[in-house]
Length: 592
Image (cartoon, rainbow, N blue to C red; front, side):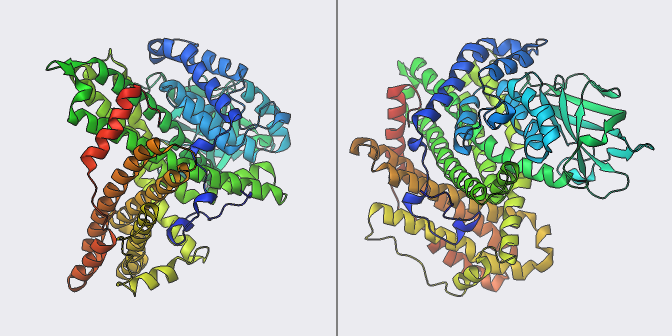
């Protein structure tokens, strides 16, 4: 494959992609697998035996474990060698994140350090700042945190009140304010702090050292989950920040925050895959061991349904996350080949796929929530005991729908970014949507097609179901469309489901060249159930949207067309799920 992504961010809605132009996890090479194995071995030897101690926040334990990861090079995977790191490809970093994602609170701490803690300085810092701070962050000698949220400024980050005023001698910014929900706050030596200079309307960013006078913090927050993650409120009282510690340009802080969050979203989507696979392991192990009515509960159809759905959602998440990750990697490499510097190439390379990053964060976090919820249900009464591993998995999962922007914000962001790309003619969105809207009879017939042709025709029909709604909502609401959040989230849900389904279709189709015929029956089962479910979900979201914007005299026509576009040929979902579950039960672990 060339180092240029075949589709631009968001373009999946209006264009098809060839199976040979996507990446699937089965194509990871031995080097990537070695990195992932190192991460898994580290969790097995250092983290899993100490989960209770971590949750009790034993003094110095989390910081010490992060330092051990630094000794293995795991904190420096994004960092160039000249700054003390072991710079890896974007795909390798994502696979490492997946491997570490099963580490509960520890995964939160290491992701915060290597991601939102380190990357603002790496990507936006000048040479002096990078040389001063990055090497010690790469080794774990120093720890990092990201200080954006305030008591009155969460999703609306730019409304923050933290202020920086230039001192009379012009050598320092005097920083005053309060930040909350700061991950790694209790031990991070280096903080990226967002504040407004003087009466600026937008944020700037500063590199602040915890040891400086005036930096204080509250005790650890008492949280529902991720109890081992240090979460503090941090106060800045007349803190003298040297002017050379302004990160980026004045007023660039909001842009820095947004771009780092795009990256954080797609990385979180990788980490939840690791968490889901571990929860599935516990689920199937217990289902095979627990006996009721004279047999293992894994033999019951209701349990097989749950196990199969856990597999399907995890497999689908993985398919879509690594597809988008490869597109991002190609975009970054293409920019570097044009002479764009490392930091800017990474920032812009990810930002171009802000739509996919937001959708994957939502889908992945909600998939993990499903998986861990059903893990508790499979355990039954024991699942409600804190002595079982699914207790921690269940509690720790919930934060992912809030981290990196709530799922509601990300749903809205995805649609907003798509529409803006259309308005700027970066995507031929509105012309394509108008053509679909004006041609309601153009629906692909799914009959008499080969297996993959049928699935890809369904994907195209589902895309047209989304496109047909865009002119209607645009005309119905005009400039007030941004206020119609329920309708926008309907469209976002449709987008998300279609992207995941298309990614899974392409992955399974590509697997035909890798797997044997017997294995392929199971992958087709996964795809069949997913396609059947997605068609229903897209139809439901579309019906909700139509009922919310269309005049009554147009609703029946639009819903009739929508229904035809969301038609999927029926399959025996019960038998398909049973075959998936029986493979999982036989292996007693996730091997898909």
